[in-house]
Image 1 (spheres, helix red, strand yellow):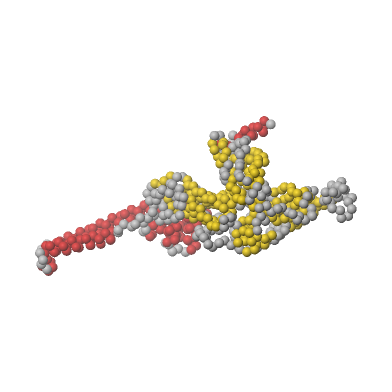
Image 2 (image 1 turned 30 degrees about the horizontal axis):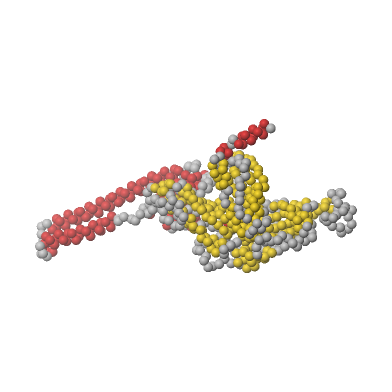
Length: 580
């Protein structure tokens, strides 16, 4: 007993419990029928809560079913959660939004995510159940849907309560063979009891969703599942007597069972799949069908040019999240936008209700005061219309010098030409005034004419030489700086830090391009590779280095850089320098 108390104290003193509480709400399924209950669970991580939160929604009867605590050791770290389980029974059809549940912990207020529950008309249950000890049923809650719209279905397998059953082989799920649709991954089945035609059955329910991929009548064939059954055998009963009859007077005195492998099939069904309308379809529609909301956030709120921001766009609701693509982001020259990482948090067992987060890395190229705007379009099958969601730009503060290319200043030759254009008219004017109206031959014979021409010529030569020397010196100074940086980066290729190696290799690609092309900075490695005519295999190796560097720095996807990788990087850089 003391050892147990000590273990609990050690767990509760673990740093994990010093972390902020994390709240999550989830449903067993996101769709149901009238009077058919679903389970709602509220999980509170890193906190002990004893008082169950109150949840009320019109036309939903929500009752606390139980509460528990859970201790876990995950990767050597202690995890503690308070769990509250509710039974939610809808009284009428419709789409219900369960608002974020507010819970106060240690004087601070926390909220769960919101949930969406879709309720359809009751199917009326099985009215024509076969008089058998076991059978299957396919339940489809609606008879029509749109292309891309997931339709939740249930595969129900009924067993007389005296039968012991087990899916065979273990872990096997029902199979629906057919074309023109896709199905979601099965969660673990649910067991319950139900009375059908006055007879009590044990019921095993598999839940999934089917999605039609093209318009037309979608025929769902019979699904089947194999089971290993233990069937009771009544000793002493006359031949042909029903062993499963509730009026069996002979009982089962010897508890005899017959072991039997059976394949149980459900009925078939069909759904009318309607095409998505062409009218009103937004240009940025990518196939999302359902009911969604969208939010955006950015961290930090203040930074400098060249330093990364994390820009998150969260799409949540009820629909085909496997077809929800990254939202459209407004193009702004001040932002360099990298491809997002994607995270999906399912809020029900099937995955129809979820939160999909797109996490972008934004690099400011110039001072800017706002993020790009975001838009996401989807089709709402309830209203049968397209909807476009927009997230307003978020305010940010970015300081520092702009990295955007500036318009080139006039070259020395251009300035020289311009100076010449100014001098010639002036000289001509002076000569005209000095001539007093006499001809050019008379002026040329004057004693001051040739000395004046020689002085002007020497002045022009000196001006041009000075500008050329200044440009040459500035270019050489920049070239010397690049050569020094190049030598330093080649030494950095021997670093044990993978990020340092890839950053050095990417910068070496840029430096070699600058040294050979004489183009003014800045230039990115991608631009350098694409502007040079190099063999395709070499181009792929170079772009692979740049992509790995971006994964290290921006997507935080780390992998070990081996000695062979360093050799390959050096060979790629050597080939790049020779090719250009």
